[in-house]
Image (cartoon, rainbow, N blue to C red; front, side):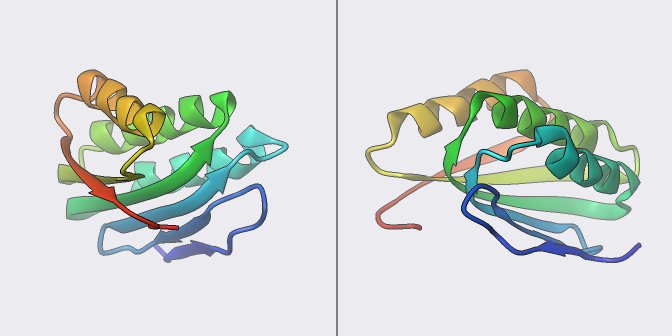
Length: 124
């Protein structure tokens, strides 16, 4: 399995997924075709083989369809029997209540995944 790297654009986040289980999604997510962008990422995490998957999410903005696809990606990672533990580092700006709340909603849905909420200033 190869690493997956996608450079960010004005409408899509930077993606850096390593076969060691280190996954990073950084930036804004409002792709024109959410399926075209996220479906390959979901397929990639379904094939990941790693004892621990560490996911760093630093998302400035997600549109509605991206929030659903990101949840699907985390569900696929959670259901991957080749990954024993999933840790999500959910980074958000100190005044971004919506992003903090979204992480809380995901945490309620994904009870097997360990979430760490990291509040910051100027993280983008």
